[in-house]
Length: 222
Image (cartoon, rainbow, N blue to C red):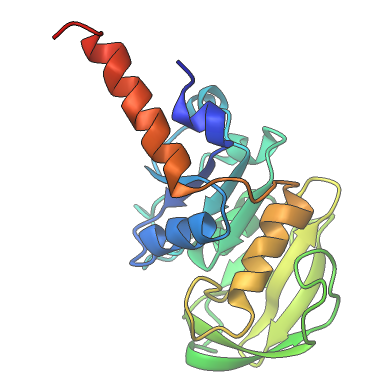
């Protein structure tokens, strides 16, 4: 019997304590790609065993540089798997790869103007000026080496970045909420253009796998 993750080319959402982690997974499934949520304590070895098709790092309420803050196993970024960081996940990615995260006093909460400076793959086909939903006190002030800064906002000089060769990208805002114009389109650009996935999953696929799993466990006896 096929494992659901193998069968559906799963996108794993790493939860850093975000209120929106489940919503992110739902948005991925709405794009017809199977997705599950995993805790931030997942290690690179555990992630390797899961063999996800792509990884999304969720937001979270902490500061990445504070003692005791949820940490990203940096080895996850070296697995060769496409990764998309959102808010805290974006900052965790930046810090792990040699970028700079700081509190410069420029907090942004709510609707914010985003200026796309380099469309790249993430903003392909999208307007250069967008209204997005921000919720951050810290921000990335310097992108990691080898990354292109693709967008900025009044309070976030690095509001998005990507590394085409490594298939890594991230945004400071929350594309998963409806308040972000074109947020779903940006998420789908990650899934389809950066990660190279196909929109083939449906809820019926999950039901079929669950039924097969139950039959394998209980057998055909009555």
